[in-house]
Length: 154
Image 1 (tube, rainbow, N blue to C red):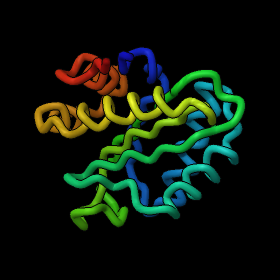
Image 2 (cartoon, rainbow, N blue to C red):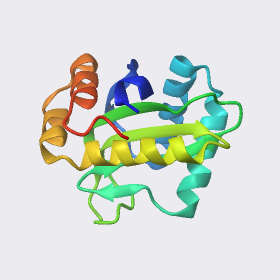
Image 3 (cartoon, rainbow, N blue to C red):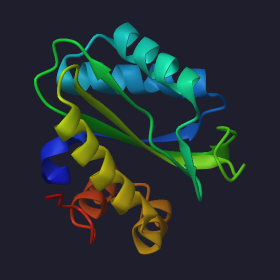
Image 4 (spheres, one colour):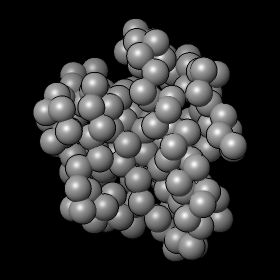
């Protein structure tokens, strides 16, 4: 599994200001709808339901919201870099500015876990996060994400 197979260049977005998870999830719904043909409302609802089980803010300004959707054929992702970090109830209580969201097919647990582990490793790399925070061009951000040190999973 490779991040370049999970996230399309057009599914990388930079936004100026997000003030809530709800608004972020709505924006992600639009990104997934526009890039993968998913229903925007279903994406938003699935992310909100998953977040209700426990916050997906993993610390150091990073969040990894994820969920499963019926009818999906493969794991797909989207990345949002927020100019102004916002409160996300992260485990370290720090605001979030780097969000990598994943959706997996409903019955595909192995690929979902592999993808989540791959994204987690990538987003734990401090050099990768520094590059993501230093750039605002979505094409550069996609390159950083897909060519980082941890972009391949077994």
